[in-house]
View 1 (tube, rainbow, N blue to C red):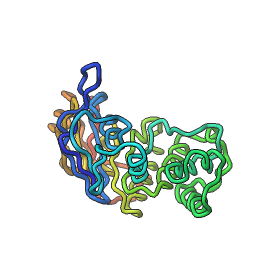
View 2: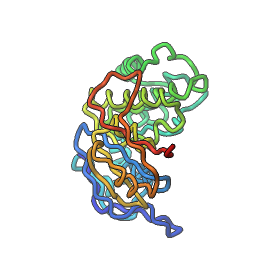
View 3: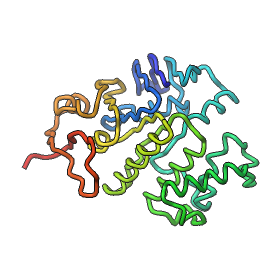
View 4: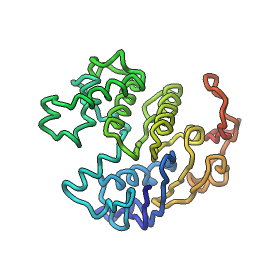
Length: 272
């Protein structure tokens, strides 16, 4: 579905963020990107939808080479890629419903969006999505009156209103407490399964990545140093990704989770 071939990014300063990225993502797969700060995770996600321009290589989505597109054709291709941001990217003074409906901007254009003239089917779908993400009670609330978890749910609903085939998710749990983080990751995972969406999730929490992703890719200094199943992560591999540390391996013990096929989680810890 999504293919990256030889993708690299070098900034005008000369700093290289990505080098020779080779990656294929099939339909319906949830992939977690892990790695230390500065490893290139956010840059990789933004290269896919061209918010950051790759310096070299090819990126193709369902046979369409994104790196060759510009103007209206690029805007059209971006409809297929829903973006969920770390800092939510909501308009605080607008209501929850208005923020969700902004996900139609790529279809209705700026002026119809500005004048709130959305097609009736899009409005009906926004209502359905807000119910699905658990915010049907907050439709008329201003975005700045929401908690962090609620704001992230609005961002998820907005991305899905694009009717995307790929989700690009940048640090969805960075500002959330542990319980809310699990809820948000579980919601993203369930929605991907329901809609057969592929997803790339940039995430720092290794345990959450193991619990909710089908596949994990580890980046270090802009290069892929691991690509495999969550259960294949070992202390040695994590050291390769993050550098020397004391890795404590333990089985996830989530009191509010129904046991599934969750792999053993690996968390960064200090020996006691």
